[in-house]
Amino acid sequence: MTPRDSAIQIAIFDDVAGGHHPGYVNGIAAGLLRAGLEPRVFTPDEPPALQGRGDWIPVVPATVRQIARGRRNLKLAGAACLRSPTPQFWDLYLDKNIWALPGRLQHIDRRVHVLHHSTQYSFRNRTGFARLRTVLAKRRLRSLVTSGDLLVVHTRRAFDLLSGFLPPESILRCGYPIVEPPSGRIETEPRSNSGRLLFVGNARREKGLHLLLEALEMSKDEVPLDVVGRQDPATRHRLETRFNTDRVQWVDRFVDDVELAEYYRQALLVVVPYLPSFLADGGASGVMLESLAHGTPMVITPALTDQLPEAYGGAIVATADGARALSVALEKAIDRVEALQAASRVEGPAYIREHHTFDLYVKALLGATVER
Image (cartoon, rainbow, N blue to C red; front, side, top):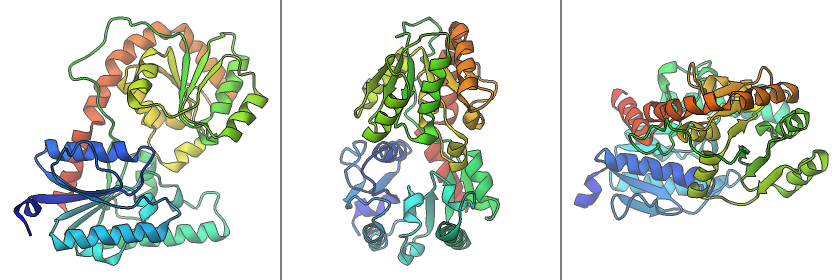
């Protein structure tokens, strides 16, 4: 074991190459480095935050269906951590890895598993093989926590679901981290905006873009809409066939963080019309958190109410998840947009700094593992 190896106390693992995963891993690596800890990182691509520090060990990208490949990656990681003893192992995507975890990881002193969505641990709408899969998944979680592993979740829904069959002390609920706004910058002065609504992300049904398009057809306000993010062609075609999308600008491609930040900052309102199925999934809304970080007011559905800051003055919540209720909420928000903007510019970034930074996230995980 080299002196460099002996300085590494924590390994972090995520073998998914796309989506939010690279940014999430990079943020955690940066947070550990700021905390004075050099991580051993197992990812397909080297996180930019390392810059020659820590120890990056490449692994082959693995999707949720490539269980055998994921297991090989985890075995490689486990062997490396045992060969150059590493006290902690943070598995950053238990959603996939629950079916691939090798036994050798149990020889590492402390083990942490991040669960982004909890839907596969609920029997809701599950029958036959899907129900059996949930039984087996819950059994695996019980085995992990019995062995002393810590589970990390990001929402109240996920915590409540898991604590229904696991000891609550085995679960850490911690706000999903995003890159925080510029330090000390609270915008109280009006800023120019595009006068357009903004919907961010893929138009999967649970994200409710169809509700928003229907609501816009009902609304008396003819406000244009930007839909930003790469879309499934068949889904987009169905929406364009069903609804009048003349006022919609489709930014149907990958948009990097810099460009996306400008869409947030320029939007009149961000609309997050998620369905109850999103709530049941137990995942955090990155769009809501990014809207808060950029100080942009929102219109949301009840599915996201429990993720909204208490007494937050920068959002209007629809009374139901239907198109009519969303249309009424939109009209109310447009009528009150100046007051919503003034509140969101102060309260949103402040809330993110206090609850959702990578430094806070890393501190919470470190504190929880010390206590175990």
